[in-house]
Length: 121
Image 1 (cartoon, rainbow, N blue to C red):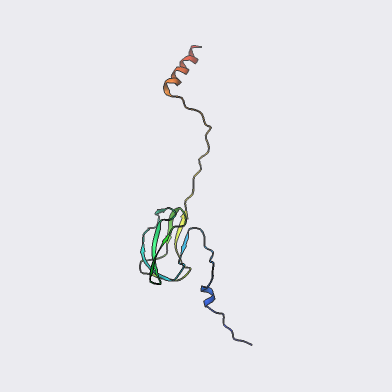
Image 2 (spheres, rainbow, N blue to C red; image 1 turned 180 degrees about the vertical axis):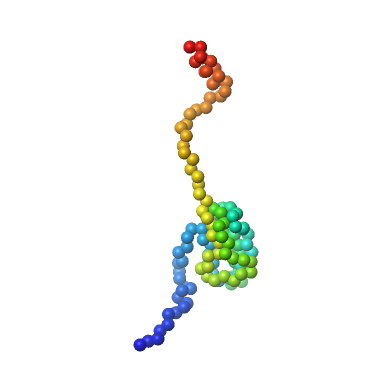
């Protein structure tokens, strides 16, 4: 019988981690330097959310979608691990209004003259 223990490092060496749209995660271990958003704030795709210091570099992480900040799981100065979910962005929903039939609008003057002609007949 062999006493082979599973290698803990394989968990950290995953090439791809499936994340839900709107979840901003740490792609590398590091320290949170600054947070630019607050819970409930609306953001657009590409807006800076926070700065992550890792490997002597400051990385600004941006929003991947348009939406509203639903959760901030970090604090300034906090040390984070790889694949930790740091911020959740709730996608913006587009409200679609029912289509109204397109009726050309007449200026008020023409409308009054048409009404007068109809009443004379």
